[in-house]
Length: 276
Image (cartoon, rainbow, N blue to C red):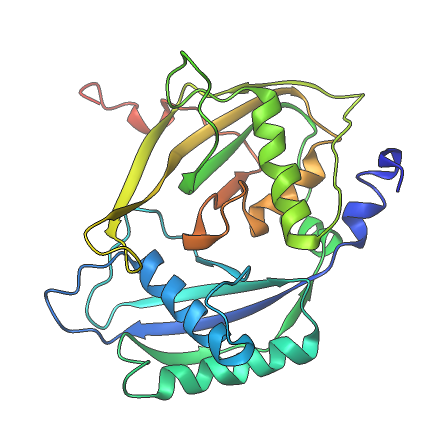
């Protein structure tokens, strides 16, 4: 396939499915300190293993509107979006039924009670664009990363530094992995810079289940990442990422961000408070 067809033809032809659910936390043990992302990742793996007999899965999710600092509270409610790429409607329908039964079981459903389970929705770039509305294609745009975006750290640079090439590859490689296609950004009419000066590095530590005594890290950068210049040809990638995330790591809701239609000033929230 000629990469000249991108993004108009290939990106617009991509289809995936979304399953939404409202859950209530029923885990009452004070010692249960696992991060919500790892708890729900384990649920997704558990449900998938009942269908495919494997612990590996490329099904992704995000807790709607929640940052990486979110912590579960007793009887607290959350809304989850579960996203399926490269799966048939029949598979997803079966997964939905298995998910409902999984949470209804007294053992596997000990963390959450299912309050509402939506129907399976087909999703596309056109649907995302219509829901988002008009977004400017030049000037400044802001991606507010709610969960850590992992990327390869450049030698002799700060951990928060990311250049344009690495940033673009976070989308190319993710979409290629999710959809099994060679997706390449050309952007001949674009001319933009990535401003990585206003976000922070963070990491979530959790004990490894497969290697006793070892720690696993969900790490990367969170906060506001600004893009400045002309980015009209890259805008479809940004729209897709606003639902499908960025970065190659699919687990633990990594790379989830909110795409601001109007770029917020970094210091806006601190004014007029002089102390801030």
